[in-house]
Length: 445
Image (cartoon, rainbow, N blue to C red; front, side, top):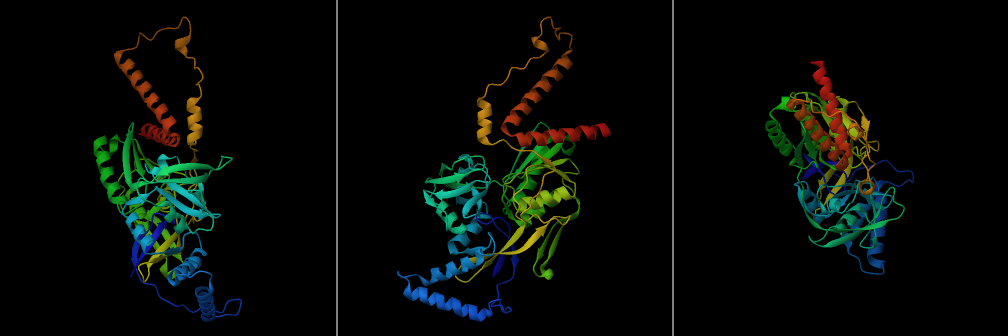
């Protein structure tokens, strides 16, 4: 049997591959109540038999056992749990980058389904679901009492079907309903675009396509820009990236480092501890990098951001990340199901554990919420006076053609940056930092 090692939040994206198999039972010391493991298992057998034979309705024995297994695992932490055959198959499909549903990464918090991140361009994203939202009801039914996998299963459905989720959001006094139309989710792991002479690398997930896609699109973008010398800087956008395969996060980080540690994992048994290092060769050859993160950046995203920050290879901008520093191993079981078990914590090169702490940005920049941005757009902008409004002003007729052309180019660049600032304030701020770094580099030469 195989194990899958995960660096992502439970609910959608998961794991990298290693090999071993599940063994048991394991002997343990007597617990505080004086019973051995075998006595406790006898107790479980007694309870199971009484439920099976005396419960008011006839019950399915297999379902009872699965529920007991899941209860044991979910009592450990929010990311451990049992997956039946269908859930296990869906997990494996998701790591390949295409699946059906809403397009959100979720976990459990205080009995509610918490949105870690909506995925770019998915039905949930288009409907306005935001990182940090708490889903309290699905189609009018409370999620209280459901396991994470049960809630996820309820949110799945045929393409084109409608689902209504009730959302609690920070800053909103009352819960509100959001209607979402389910669709086929095809994840484009990496997207690129140019903003002036800065390359924006948007990485949405860490599935098994991420590194190859990043390498291909990075090469294309550098060539189209005219080479590395033509790039002022690179924005690595990891916002609302819920994580995924640990191995992919390591390879992506290695792209931008010229050696040194990327991440280490520490397990209960020190013999299982691992350390992952970058190979020599920075693909960007020192071109400045700004990494964008927010509360929807989790796990594998935090590995990348934390490593680049610790090596001072990048300036991290945005808001504190989600804080998932645990690694899950998915162990296939008999009956085509699997168990998802937290087996280690990961640490950044400086020895920081991100578990429940997150990565703190070097520069904190909040992103205005969609509603606030819409209200600001609808507000009338104040009139700004300039030299051109003054009576008796001097005209700029004396400018040469080259000076006039340069002035027009600067005005176009300023208008473009103003547009970007309205669309994506954090990204505009990141590019401003790269401009400053670029100017410093030019002055130093």
